[in-house]
Image 1 (cartoon, helix red, strand yellow):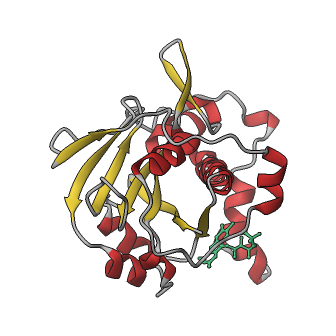
Image 2 (tube, rainbow, N blue to C red):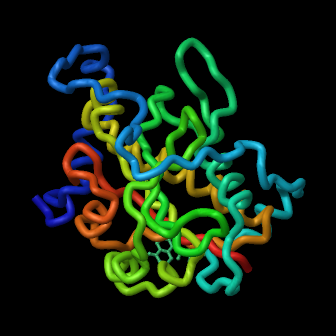
Length: 244
Ligand SMILES: Cc1cc2nc3c(=O)[nH]c(=O)nc-3n(C[C@H](O)[C@H](O)[C@H](O)COP(=O)(O)O)c2cc1C
């Protein structure tokens, strides 16, 4: 076997292929995680207006203008800008038969990606670590703190993670998708996160804000920051946002 064939990544892709002969076989070894996460013991809840902050923009221009931006102006983000960005990433756009369909697609409408926000400088939003509660379009404060240094450290010293107004931190809740798609679900987690981040970048471009997606981070340090266990819920992706 060549080193390539032994590699975990390649093995994963081979072992999670759909094969005709194996389709439809039930596997009850995965429990089903709830579709939503909320924090009843949050320090505080901050309801946001899902229609706030939107500005008309030309989609084609946004596609052409989008760039990964790593330096930002000094001014803080506004609460409305943050609301518009959250809506673009995970806002509910249609309610149907118990499902809340969102701005970004998700395999099986299971939405295994959770959004946390490290708020550094946003007008009217206390600095700290927040969780985005999707059904109510609200933020839940997990911890009031200045987490710039921790986040920059967790992000391999990428300084813009501290200079941003806020950093989106996306995690994946494994059993929300694995009970249905088993090991193949991991592919879908990352695909879902990619859609979400692209929506963020396009919406930010429309609002003249800059975003830089970040895949380079120490997973355990990010998981510790957002207080998830790193087994059932894992860090997937980050994105820094600030004014241009
Ligand atoms: C999955 C992924 C991970 C990335 N991780 C980082 C990162 O850790 N740090 C960084 O500065 N840029 C990161 N980027 C941004 C890329 O460097 C950038 O998209 C690429 O250079 C193309 O530039 P553009 O986005 O301006 O078109 C990442 C992009 C993607 C899609």
